[in-house]
Length: 120
Image (cartoon, rainbow, N blue to C red; front, side):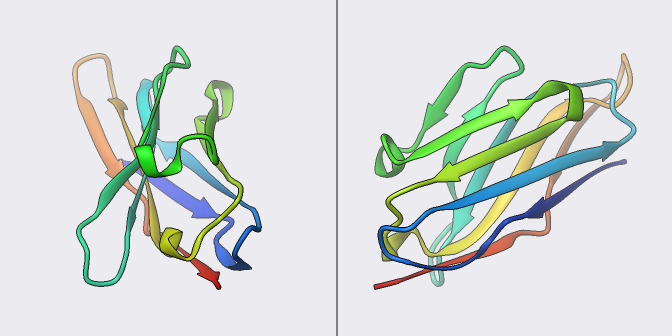
């Protein structure tokens, strides 16, 4: 099994910054894509940002220019630096990672989620 543990959420005023971290542990052969998703109250979970093992990134239009995703492959850890936060960024942020647990088996794991609240 592969476990993801997130940290770094909290309460911040609009215009402020937060940095989320997510560390993957367990039976890991390789990690391909790592990403962040969020779910606001009453809404579906949506993609925030993705990063591949090679460093290619993809962002939701709503966060481009404000959020930066990065990763430390040696530590199987992904980060999300969130700047210029807006109230509409409020939600539970989930980490996701996909890769291979062994040379023959894949995994796709989710973290437990961390709350981000942006006050106006």
